[in-house]
Image (cartoon, rainbow, N blue to C red; front, side, top):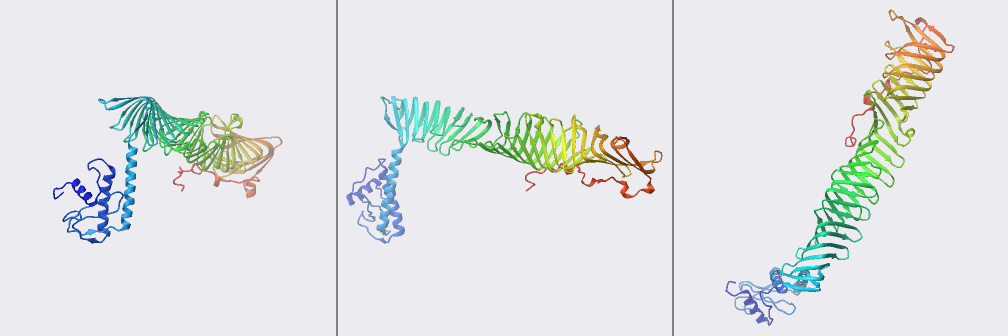
Length: 598
């Protein structure tokens, strides 16, 4: 102070004038310290909101005083005489009084909550040179809602800390129970370090087992860092490091993470788990293996272990017979429905089939896979000349019975191979006999030959085309180098292939043929041969007709060029459909990603 008087002397002077004895100054009394704080606040408020007046006699010459209402005391605060004395209104006094009471309660509460309290011990001894009290037998400490039980303990009153030993148990209200063999507890930070056989239980939710656990009571988070196991009603999760947030029910696991439940085992480097919702979250590559031995690898996603529903990204699934990959996955194990979206690729290892699309639905119970949205199939042959198939929708049916395994394609079917192309409304591929059946207006092309029928079946042997069966209203057209159309029709036909090219055709029933005849020496056109008979054998060389054999009462006629009319150049039902013959680009679209389709 400027006049040399101490703050304590000034307070005594003021109290003498007011008749109130102040508390002993210098003691750590929170009430007195708060009063000083409130008086300073009163002075500031009064300066801003009250009228000023002069008084120099109350607290000594050249000093002013402010009087306010308070319980059991009247306070004076000094100011320069050159200043005017502010007046405090009744409303301000009431507001200040309320604030004082509130601060006092808060201070007392904080003070009361701070220290660890010894509730019971069978024996107590003082180790003054070591700075602690030694407690043995049924030791109990409390702090707020926390209770600590143990067989023996050291209580460091100055540090407000405890070391506990034996059967250590901590209860946090009625929701958390922690047991261990050793405990170090800091009552100031409210942090517990538990060691050896630690069991952390959130009642009705989950139990955490470890040997080294740090429990932060203010945040209600338990940390482990030397191996831990979390167990609940559905799952068991283990990792090297992790923590459990009791308030949010969220547990985080790091390094060598394993999840075991009745449907799956999972391994990852990092994942999270909500013990209330039973949902597993992962943001790093995670591998899951189901009961059937199928392996799933995902980059990111979540799995609800209670509803058995999953959402993943960038996943790959693999079994002994197939591999499936895609951008976005949704799995429903109750409905047994797996859905994959975006750049989907499915590989059938046994059939050398690869299926591509933007959408796949897999019905596990029926072993049916539906593929659509830019869907196409690649079947790899031994000569590395891949057979490609595309359609609006592809359906793969799996079965333990080989005869029941098949691939269906329907609506706008197109196939492409270097030496074979085709279109149809739908087809069926039966794995047992490696046969492809085409339905509803099928058309096939092999080099310069076009084949049509009500239905067509293609036999694949040693991963190459072996035979083609044309069933009902069979028709084969072969275009020569001069663009003439040699034609054969009949009830049914069988086309045999050799080295990928048509080798011979056998017509069975209602056979008819029309072919253009040329002079062998100068290749001059000499006329058309038309033959009708029951059965016909046609041989091909390098894709062209070079020999015909007719059986069972053939009826032949030859028409020279000068007698020909246009209608004589074709058999009934002839159509040349080269304009719809697919190219590779028609069947194998450029790669379409989920982003470019938007």
